[in-house]
Amino acid sequence: MLYEIESQAAAHNPAILLHTDDTVAIARKNIEAGRDLEIHGVMVRTLAPIPAGHKVAIRSIRAGDPVYRYGNVIGFATAAIEPGEHVHVHNLGYQELDTAEIAVAEKPSSQRVASSETFLGYQRADGRVGTRNYIAVVAASNCAAHTAELIAESFAGTTLPENLDGIVAFPHGEGCGQAMGADTEQLQRTLEGVLDHPNVSAALILGLGCEVNQIDHYLGRNGSGPTPAALHGLTLQTSGGTRGTVEAARKQIFEFIDRAAAEKRTEMPASKLVLGLNCGGSDSFSGITANPALGYCCDLIVERGGTVVLAETTEIFGAEHLLMRRARSAEVARQLLGCVEKYKIYLRQFGGSFNDNPSPGNKEGGLTNILEKSLGAVAKAGTSTLEDVLDYSERIRKPGFVFMNTPGYDPVSITGLAAGGVNLIAFTTGRGSAIGFPSIPVLKIASNSNTYRRMTGNMDINAGRIADGDATVEQVGREIFETLLRVASGARTHAEELGHHEFSPWRIGPVL
Image 1 (tube, rainbow, N blue to C red):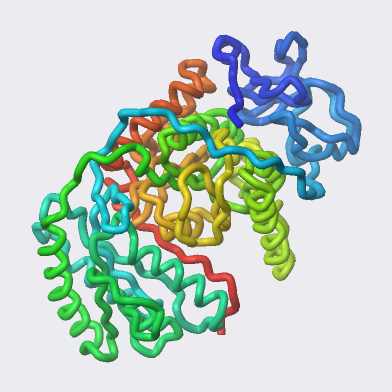
Image 2: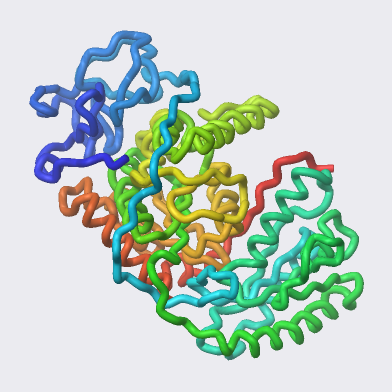
């Protein structure tokens, strides 16, 4: 779903109407009280100041009536609202909508087009392609996290082959004091995905020795599978403690470096792009500019045979019906709905709701509740057929548009995407974000020009030009696509230049 903005209207009108059925328009910039607005042929005078990105009523809305944005319900009026009023948390209430399974007809996969676009990547033996070439040092538990960092830091200043991007650590706080079963299995699946990743040339799995998450699981010693040739394991308790383990790890990593020196970038088709989608610090403009532009880019990738992965289950709630209608089959639609229903059960254990998701920054940026936030968030995924639904950190197995069940919390969400095998991440933000990942480039797309100017050193692309009237959704979407091809070939994102290495597995169970 792409939301269009008439560029000529955006250039002179301070308010944007996103759909003819909408009962609110969005302030393109700060609007003072008493300002006359012409919105889709209707004159409205503002009754209060309307901050940029916030909503102004364009019709009378009775108390209890639904309020519409994007042509969909975003909540219900808690009081009578007159045309020209500011619509936000003070007069727009949240109410969980009934989620009913909808009839889905079998539909074909999105059509592919012939293309000549390529990038320079690392061909792996299993057919996947890396956009980076790292040696990973992964902690099996928190007890090995500091040593993993020491090992990676010990290579600072070391001259590495030009085709090796570095030695990166994956410290985290999990791996022990947790129940065996679903929680530990999810952690193991996540770490497996980090160790066996197209952007990783070789890896070291590092344990203390006595933790719940034993390194034998990854090394094939417990019947879980053969040990990959480029994976080695160490524990502090059998390698001489912290110092002895650092020295043993360095010897092994130097062998990995010699092996990696022979790996070269070669020309690869755009079909080998596997793009993870995420948003963080969203504002009202995210669903108008950055997300629709990224959605246009995603359609370009899918048309070329590539893969795009939408995540953040908490941020499709209220918009899941739009995704279900795009499902390739009724079974895929049921799987998507199942993610939402299971997440409801998960939230109820802690007395929470989906509407706890919008942060204070989201609301300050004009997003009133999760329904409004989700309707803008799903625009990241374009218009392609939904091919598959994956659990958190599950291996991506099909090309095209797929969905992964992750939380909305950014570091946990992108960790799941990374473990699934994405080789690039595109991250839209309205309020501003500085997150990255140890082994995958993260491209930042600002939804408004003010954030882009304030955080130029973090932002890679300014989608705010759409709301400014200086560019179209299609133009910025094409810019994102072409930038991703350059990044896949080795161009560094700002998050990489700044050294952001956020990594946070999703712990779903109790601490014991």
